[in-house]
Length: 116
Image (tube, rainbow, N blue to C red):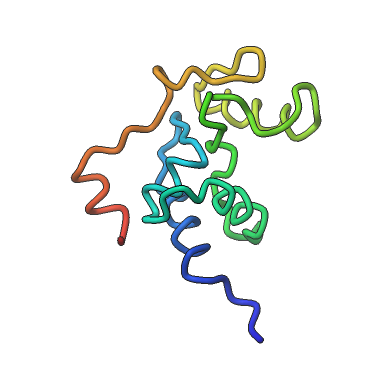
């Protein structure tokens, strides 16, 4: 048995890598864009499996309501909040306003940036 990620996990990673600085996407949106509709939990699991050397922008992925995935005040939430704020994303009460900072890739961005 190998330790290489499945094709589905790889697609999630590639999609997360496409989220631009200053924008966020939801776990479900990442799964949808990776061609895996309804697999939001797989998106979360895939991020946990990503080796740190990949330097994936995991912090740009939030819940579908804009909430950070970690408990408010936790070390992980504060880290995610800090990384987002460095990119100009406003985080208030452990939440990002998706209408302002949500990633909405246009067709050309999807065709060029995503391989599926």
